Amino acid sequence: EKGNHRHFMAKEIHEQPEVIGHTLARYVDFAAETTRLPADLPFDWRDLKRVVISACGTAYLSGLVAKYWFERFARLPVDIDIASEFRYREMPLDADGLSIVISQSGETADTLAALRYCKAQGQTVAAIVNVPESTIARESDVIFPTLAGPEIGVASTKAFTCQLTVLAALAIAAGRARGTLSAEDERALVHGLSEVPRLAAEALRLEPQIEGLAKILAKAPDALYLGRGTSYPLALEGALKLKEISYIHAEGYAAGELKHGPIALIDETMPVIVIAPYDRIFEKTVSNMQEVAARGGRIILFTDARGADEAGEAAEVTIVLPDMPAAVTPIVYAIPIQLLAYHTAVFIGTDVDQPRNLAKSVTVE
Ligand code: M6R
Image 1 (cartoon, protein in one colour):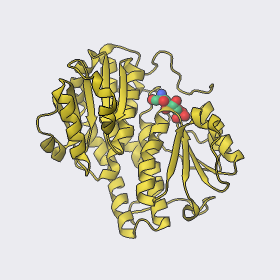
Image 2: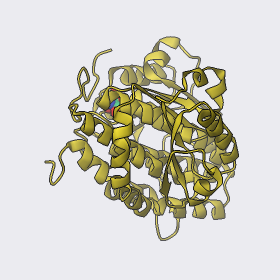
Image 3: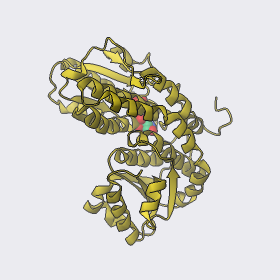
């Protein structure tokens, strides 16, 4: 049931500190600050030359974040694709490689077909699923469950952040096993992860401010989301969430791609949502923001105190998140992005939990 909330989506957004905590407890040892995966995995991280990930929609976007993590922490190249393309592309796969499929429902037809293709090619298939009795879970060699609990709202929220939590733990475990992370690196990363439930709760406290932005967005015919690094998949996720529940046309772009086309769209009617925690490439994103501001675009910036300081006057509105380690920003920044889509849709009056034309589980192609 919805409890005190108006919609399942609101309830599920608010459950995130708790369900991320449950999921984490399954994959990390908080006291030792190490990851903790089953000892009998059907693959060895040290033998892998690459990892192949396929999934659909929001689950695909969690995989896209994980690509950055696997490549950085474990120096393990990741090939990732949406399952509907992957399944027909007939990508050559080495026997004994690892494929990861990601699915909340565990019943998505294209993701299941991708899994079967990988198995037929001799890959070991690991599934990150929220429904442990699902078809995808049953057909995989190993499952890494997300402990998000049932997700009813069609828009995926808590499943996404729990997928990210599991993937972060896997990437850290892979890095440790492959010797690309020291024991100290692992401790620092796991420590950062263990802070996520608290950081997520702090992010939820931004809700009144974000609700105030809904009226700006609700009037806009289109919106653009920009980010770099792991904030790039988050920009795609922000745009997907806004489209599916508010029916406002939105696009997510890597900030560096702006001048390769989309900057032509910028005028005073175009809100540009920039996701940019302060990091080593923050300056690059600021210069993209200045390009948008110079053309009259209205910028809503999600950053931290340092980023707000460095960004100067470019943004019309700045939402300041708490400071946190770079590795966990995609998990925590997902929350205000979800709230923005949610409040915009509520303001417009669409059917948030059951948007038109969509089904929770896409079991046909
Ligand atoms: O159940 P799955 O995770 O396999 O579903 C994949 C997508 O259909 C799903 O994430 C969809 O994109 C959501 N409605 C997005 O909010």
